[in-house]
Image (cartoon, rainbow, N blue to C red; front, top):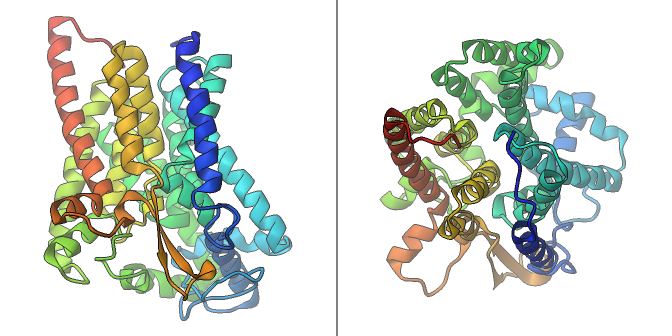
Length: 430
């Protein structure tokens, strides 16, 4: 098994960066503000609660926006956009007071972030020793300043749970224990039952030769659909017969918060909603390209990179991808740190630095009396505005898709070069 360097040259800078990250997390935006501080929003976990409440009280999930107790916060009515099975999972939230629910969900999110990074190091073959634990903890703190992670925590989102479920399948499929291998696929199947988009990983399991994992995942997903029809049949019929395809329930394609291919198409075309046929053709091409390169990376021995790439491709082809859906930058960050460690060249540390710079929670504030604290705070590079050259604005408003494109091209070149090196006997596993 691999081991991380025990010298202070790795952990020392990470400690300093972790301390700086805590300051950035708590003070930018100012934690004392009513709405924009890390503990000031948590709207999505409350929407999950409202979905659970709707199931328990017989309120239709998808006919109108839901609302409920909000602890005095600035919460509008919100649509429930997840499959019916997820609302069933959220029903126990009704047993908790709102403050306790929010505190427990925030704690769970932090634990899942650390767990995801530990799982990534495990997937890369690192020993679960003291240094790996310390580096995982430090990277988790640093990752809190990534916009997808910070916004997931701020909103009370479920993204990190879905990430961990898929990572669990990756580890189980490579486990030396037959019992674990038999369960591989259950995690991504449940994730798809909760939020549907992880169904994309069925294609990932197939192109990487794990047919049984794909079958188990599809079976687990089908079970969640069956449970939905059995318990909340009316809502299940409504969701699977129409609500599923109503992406406009979320927002206009062109909004810069939509960091998906469909958002890129709408912004480049200067329209509010991208033409469906253009998006479908583009999504097919992007999906095939992402999966093909993921398969190349997998065959070259870079399995975690392949998984991260498929996760990013999933987010690209989704009709609407908020910035916080891009939590797949977390395994990509671990891969970048791994490459810098094993590469032995100082300039390789530019990889995690550049990824952080593209995905960090950059903040810009605008006066707006319609929001708490009389301001709107834009978080993430893609949200920045002002006196910015048009060419640069086109880059930053599509920065996450650009990161995907760069990763695809770089991975394809790396896998091709690694294949050539293996033929000459000079390849080194990563």
